[in-house]
Length: 169
Image (cartoon, rainbow, N blue to C red):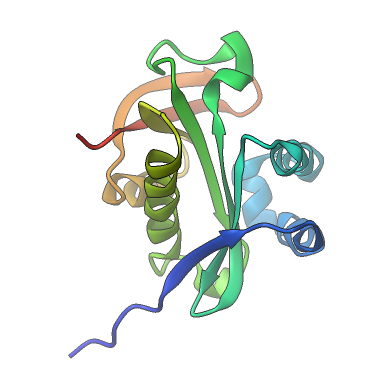
């Protein structure tokens, strides 16, 4: 019999977590998917300073292992792809601790974050944009209930898959 999966939880990110998040952003694997450290830090700082964003530290069995946030996609302006409906929230996640990657932690964290968005906001859907080169992430998002809707050329990241999860009925 397989051991039960460790408990993945989300807790609100606190100002003191910024140093830990910055350290994770220095990892070359994180930078490959989130872009330059400076732009990723700026995005996270904006989210953490916004009263309408949900910023979370991902914990695996009580240990901080990653970061996630959800932001009303309408805040990104008119640069969004046509496949994103008004009232959609954009979710982003990374697992900072390399030893916790590839173990389903990200999939469980993104599912928890989407559930939180749907239970605390009027979001009609959640969306995720990920590089077409990051197939492992796409598979994790699909397992968390997201479906592929299009490919979009993100001005900052290049070709990205657009994935959507509609509000449960």
